[in-house]
Amino acid sequence: MIIDCHAHVFQHWAGACGHASREVHWKYIQKNLTRPAAKVRRAVDGAPGDPQALFTPGDNTWAGLRDDIQFRVGPYGRLEYTLDGKDYYIQYMPVGMAQLEAPPELQLAQMSYVGVDHCVLQAGMNYGRMNDYNAFCQRQYPDKLTGLFQVDEPMADTPGWMQELDRARRQLGLRGIYYQLDTFSRYGFQWTFDDRRFDGFWETLASMRIPVFFEATAIPSYDARSYIANLQRLDGLLTRFPAMRWLLVMGPPVQFFARHGTWHFPDEVARAYGRENLQMEIMFPITWGGVWEYPYPEAQALIRDLRDRYGAHKLIWGSDMPNVERFCTYRQSLDYVLKHCEFLPAKEKELILGGNVADLCGIEQ
Figure 1 (cartoon, one colour):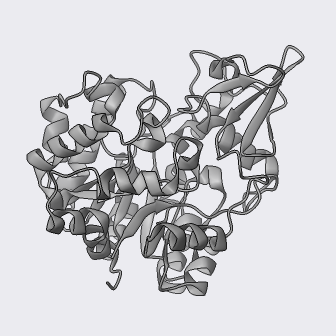
Figure 2 (cartoon, rainbow, N blue to C red; figure 1 turned 135 degrees about the horizontal axis):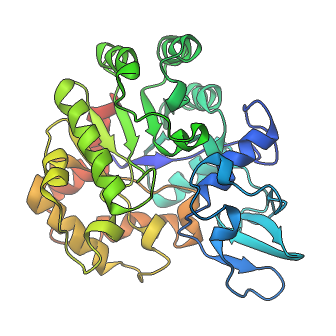
């Protein structure tokens, strides 16, 4: 059974998508694009543009997001803005996505064509306030889709969001939480995710045995130093709650630790990665598919290294559909592991391509 641990469904991004307003929703999207893997292009001739035009250099908070660029959602997978009278776009979704929406039936058609049996629906705030929509999709297609829920991470300890956590788990039946660090930018990075004010939140998650899909963005400075500091904070939670299970969304960052083709982890990072209650996504095409050529021998070497260091039981395959199709097809995002990682025996492929995430989320195989 092949299970994709990282896919998305979402309503049309032209609207609020569950947020208080369209403007709030688009701020989340704009913030997500300040350091895109996809290229910025000038609309008139395709010449390269500057992604730093989306924000004020030196200010990584929402306060630094520029309001004078007419940021907007365009057609054909594009997110657009205007600077100095010229239009620019970022090809964030595949060109074939005429409207920026992804109903569950789109993902089901992709799965059927490629041979993926089940998907886990992740839930970043840039996609919208996703709890009800992910739950709707899970109810409609329980044999095919498993939904995660979200909270506003910097506000996760407040009564309203603690109630939402309980509703998402007990009433909506969502199977895990997607937790991202970039949302702390909305509040000026006033707190870190391991601040004592969040103790009740983490203790509640632990008591409910909710798996945490954790995206360790390198806030606040978006550099290796910030990433390492966040991994040390994460390690504190991993050791405080040894029975709580975590998945490192996007896996280890190549740009910090494997620029020359092999992993070089600082001791404090290697210590966190080695914890038994932490597993790691392997999903290289979404960030490096625009640089490396299929079947991504660079990624294969990095997967082999992770397997050798930590074991196949630590690794979980994900695609980031439909986003990944800006760089490669869904089939290619699977086959570089399924068909080309020849160093993986069949039993290890079964774990990485489905067994591990089925165990993590309680998905029947």
